[in-house]
Image (tube, rainbow, N blue to C red; front, side, top):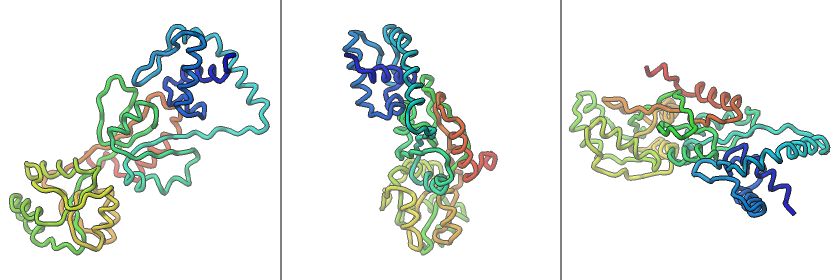
Length: 306
């Protein structure tokens, strides 16, 4: 006999478009959803969905079966809601992706005030955008806008970050400051290479880009210490010696507390536009707007840079 849960699985895959989103709707694992679908296809002897990298596309047989069962499934769901002992509104849940420093700086303190559930994921921007396309996350904060016409993702610019040169307060920057004042860029490059350098594994691209834009070549050295994130760098530099290139908004507080020193913005400004990347089919628009408002309040607006 056919398992009625197989029909519910068909309904959620059909309506959500991916196994991942169907598993969330069913409160089940993705492998479990796949097992149900495979069992139903074996039972009816027909292929019900064409599987692509981004979406499950129903076949004609899948469409026909969905239309045949949907009314009955919806009646069962109404009956379930009517007769269960307790009723409770399901809280919306947003899945977001960004770097850990951004989360700590912007979102962490606001979490107790949210009236919806939140799941945060950290990683590099390329992987997070893949997760966004696959329906695993709903919102990504990214400095990179990908031009993929097939992707169902919107990019909205909301702020900029500037890469700046900082130093621990015990670092002797007398020579560096004089060379910057004299615009002696060739000697400045040599002098900077004599220092102890910190960088983050997820920020090496910023390091190389700042160097190339200001000295017209690639850095001829490797940082002495490559740490997991910018927060670790700032803590290591705090009240000590060394240099680092970091986004401005992440070091402003430490500079204000005189824990580190701002040395140089660069002769040209190395900037990254920051984007909200979100799915066009996102259900929880209101909750998304709440998160976006928090970011806009905490971070410098675009109008300050244009």
